[in-house]
Image (cartoon, rainbow, N blue to C red):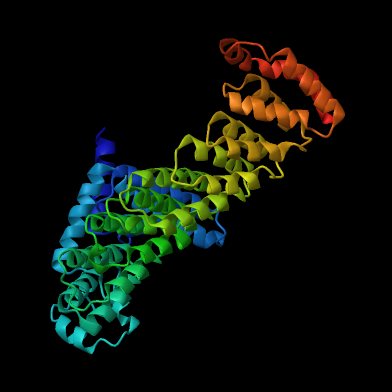
Length: 462
């Protein structure tokens, strides 16, 4: 035990007195000093997978060097005890002006650094990146406080700073000013868009803070003059998947004001084209939910309804059969603000889908709800020449076992008009044999009807 205790003391001494290489361990892992232990663990795992010599595309020496940095940072931060000691050391370096980015053109021990003079003479030079972290924070504060063209220029430079801590600081500082309406002629919009375009490692941490800021602004009708839609567009298009998922959550929670629906629909239309299957599925569901909620709004913008219909049309042509199959289900699961003509336009196109699963979904969902007998009839009549045996079985199932009389009548007629004589005669025979069963019996038989249809499969396959 003494030996273990002695080794631990040595390790703590190394951490506290800087035997390890000068680096900000939080920046190495791409997290903020306020991150939880779980967030630190996730960040380490993500980076370890990216830079592991067996998986990384980097040269072996470079990958090993990166892994050494990551392991060193994780070794300190994963243990709450050593993390507290490291945080104390880090805080001390901030207050004493000790450089914690490993040096720069302006040595941080120079206490005569004139911030005002640097600010006045600033000409957009990347020299600003060579200043230590504390000085860059002070310049960000000065830029926001004094504002104007020079302040905007400095903030834009710091919004591209290599340090996540600086970029987060810029975001927090300017959002405070936005909330207080103390803009000081700062180009807040351009700075926020620059931060949103961040594509560095662990950029989702900064993106999450941007979305939190937008959520806070959502309580104000005019967003304090910030073009929130443009920032959300940037994140929806260029951010990592984890951020795009957060964008969807932010957009869904956005409400309470008349003009929010337009923003929601615009961002949903972008996310509807996302490459991730699960995200697109969520976007479809939330679009339907939004269209359903619009029924309760006092004022409705018809252009928003039209955009919602356009998003649904996008999903009817989705590359995934599963998503296309879900469209009729979601569409009838919620009573949306869409007109019957809009529904017919969407479903009539899907009734001609190349995949039988999609066509079966249309039959099933159209027949289970009454949306107007004429619309139901028009859609089901589109299947009169369908020869896929699975589709025919679905029509037969509706014709015999549906609890909706209208659906039974229409599908029976569709099958009676089928051009294939064998299919038509076999279907008519089965419908007649079961036409007098009671509603209770019909519901009971519906559960086991698949097994009864097996004898028709060979016929329908032909």
